[in-house]
Image (tube, rainbow, N blue to C red; front, side):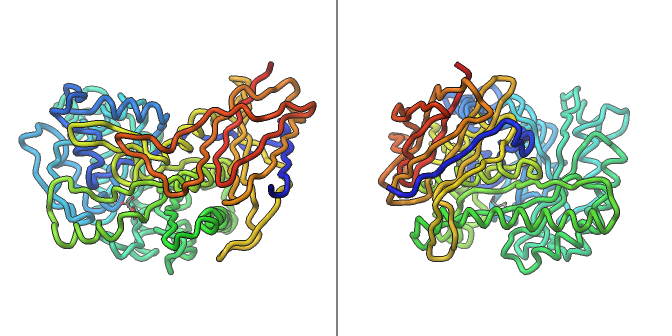
Length: 504
Ligand code: AHR
């Protein structure tokens, strides 16, 4: 048994209210996310629009608040006009990002209805790769305006009388990436982002805008890119984006769990850059962070490259269909704890992605929809992680891994939902071979008792789920002890733990 972890929870130690959009996700026109994913006409569970009701039920179960759409890399050569109106007149297009044939059977008309059915709002991307200001304005008018002008009238003509009212918009995607159609320098992107944002807000001042940060913390552009882009666009944008994917290619679980600490460094660096520009501009406004792509992504990379290289221009090929392991679920749980701890500045976080493509939900053609291992930490966080993030005052042991020093054994965060009078503690034991005694002192929460304790526990780090069997799923635990000051429990090695407390 490892050193004990002690946590003190005080109501007044508030980090910030958690923005519900911390539990967002992402659907890109990529592989089988849309076609053969959310949309499969002819499937026994499809509705009259071809959308699978069983998939919608799982999205609702996850509690996804906002869905980013339509990309991703796909957005950089996106011709939105081809995706609307009578389906038989829509043009088929080549998607250069994923070397796929895009039939445009699902476009904004359909997707906005799907999102509504799924209980989510849409976070829409404009194409700042191969297009620019006029196209972004036309799309915004089509989606949000009720005027007598051309594009708003066109939407009505297409049968959608009410505007979609999309409040959150991405100004392109990963524009510093060499893989992007229309890659830009920071100066070029900063200019087009500022001009597009300015014009979009002239048209609809109720919207919020996300400027592209660098596509990754490891990019040579990182840091200077954020500073230059914000230097030009600061006054017009509300968020800057962060993208990060985690991987365990080396098969080193301890270091994989430790690598989630890199998320903290990434977030802190971007906050510092935003605030540097704020100071430099003597601005009163604060630009916050949109972590609009995060997840584990590494299992299928070799197969995906081969598919795109050797069998290009197919319809909805199997791409990025990572089968997630038990340890991937723990890594995702750690990421969620990191986001909650940064709730004061991270306002949006999109699990990339949602269905079939690096996704918590998988579908079989003509068959079942099922939950991957990574479904569960998101499900728990989305269900119990609403309210105020509280500062975890913690004393925990530390350890060293192959590439990380001073790694805390336990990562944890409490969330207080005042309305429901509910307190939840999320905790991960990162030690792979030892349990950790966990002692929680509920100082500011007199009378609160554990009413539910759910955990993911396994000795098999590589266990995966399938349509036939959910090897990895939460277990309800009763082996905790209510003490005079709070409660104690034993966190099993490499486990995800959710303690739900209510006033007795
Ligand atoms: O989520 C998959 C891809 O990862 C996205 O299209 C892109 O933005 C990122 O590189």
